[in-house]
Length: 224
Image 1: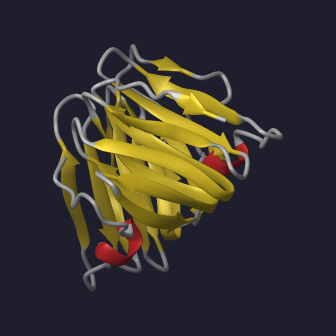
Image 2: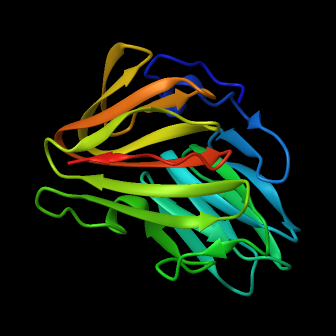
């Protein structure tokens, strides 16, 4: 992935809009590509037909997704949507928007908790459970999965190294990521990149929710 490693960062802060423009940055290529988009106020991405789904995660501003039937879906900060396939889909914003886009293949397995074309909040898909970690695969295939996790305060993932890599989206609360022996505090709205085969762990200093696209299908061992 074309993203900094070993530091907490913010997709929203690092991808500010350019006046009158839409700017995209690919951070992972291939079938399950990942890209950041920044749209200036009053800009539009024309409606086109795609044979694959797109998971849109809005991290700043407001966004309208339109084009399939008479539907117009309005997203605000923290909202997400999986766009449908084989119909026209476009995006526009009046105030500006920064979002992450993740390509999802038609044959990928999608959790029944989400439906293509409907707006949802990642942070609301899972609820906290006392003394436990709750895990959900939102979508997955043989090379990628998008994972959502809810940690009760004091729970976490023990140190491990994974064959793949991931970009963390901190959704709620606060936690600590230990990456290659260095501790990093992370809170809602911030991000972190786990590079391939690097040692890391996660602990919730408060109740903590995070989501991440994982390329390479690494698995984690839980510590409660």
